Image (cartoon, rainbow, N blue to C red):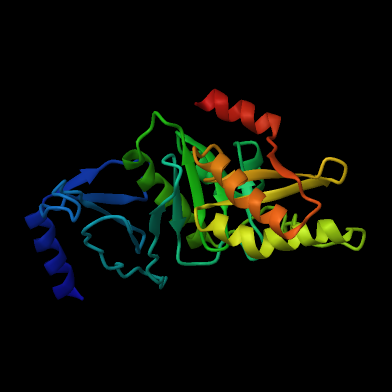
Length: 279
């Protein structure tokens, strides 16, 4: 172990280690700037590594990285936590994979800081200045930022918030009751609504979640044939969300359910007002 630590220190001096100061005193971060050219044309993008109370992370999008080993701690044994990051179609949103389950069932969207009060994890992420939306999926957390803030500034603080949450073993929600699923089929649902919900759950939702977002079923009007949906996570405010809604979701629902004549996106007024104010 001592030999490995010395090797890391030597390598760190060779590539050039520059301290990165964070607000949290419990986080020690170092940015490792790779001197090798990147794969896409020599931009020389470096990797970010953080050691936090025996935890470690790396950016999946980085071209090179130095993953620091967890340091031994007195009175506690912790496994290393490896947080991976993926981009989404929305440049203002990133997906953070903690390597541990997030939502056991369904998903949960926090469009503003008021909604985040229901979750210790969402609340701690919203404390980071520049965060405007948080979304929980099965095994990832999507964070959306305002346009005037750089991810280079936000990432370390978001990493720290996620690692602190799993280290303290808090419940994901203050209310431990399971979150209701919008696509659960109820006894009073007619055949059309049941088919719409099944398609959303089995065909459409998995594809949308791959891009760091989700959809929420808000109802079906049998007279107009319009299905109302709410875009969540990275899909909310994404430039390509309108194309996804019309070309993807609408076409599939109309193909399989003849009663469906179109799809419309709905917004929560309070969340929209707060997001616009933050932007």
